[in-house]
Image 1: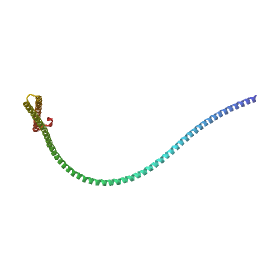
Image 2: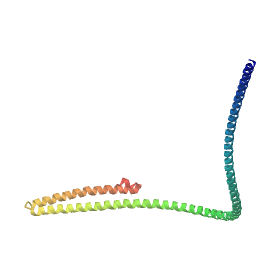
Image 3: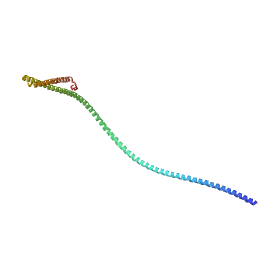
Image 4: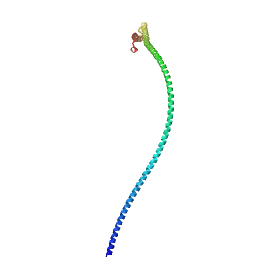
Length: 239
């Protein structure tokens, strides 16, 4: 019985030990799992850091390339600056030469200004002379205009006198026809020629009337022209 109790106790102890070993194994398993998880986390962190390091390396490479390009650009700009400095020196030399030329041109301009002043004085004298000649020309034009008006009025007067002569010739012709008609009537008396005599006297009367009327109009126009010549009126009053 004691041995059974001892065996039972040993079994209990073994069961307890197994339980403790199971707990230790569980604890170790949990620790291993935690360690594995931490290892995976560290691995992920290392991977991310490796990626970041790769990205930084690429950025550094790009920056190095950019720095090299900037260095090349700076070198080219230095060369261009040197070239521009040489050009600036040449421009300074040209500017000095231009300044000398400008001084010479200034002296020439001064001489030209003096010559221009002399020409201006001559021009003023010529302008005064031209003004005097223009005044004389205007006076001559006025006299010529007056003479032209007088000539025109005299032409009108000559025309009206010619018309008056024509009307006088018409009156003279009418009187001749009238005398001829009376002479024929006096010579032949009442006969077959009496109608012709009457017609001849009638035509002569018309010619005399028309001639007297035209001659009177010519005399009136001649008087108007004489008054215009005396008072120097315009041609619009004559037309």
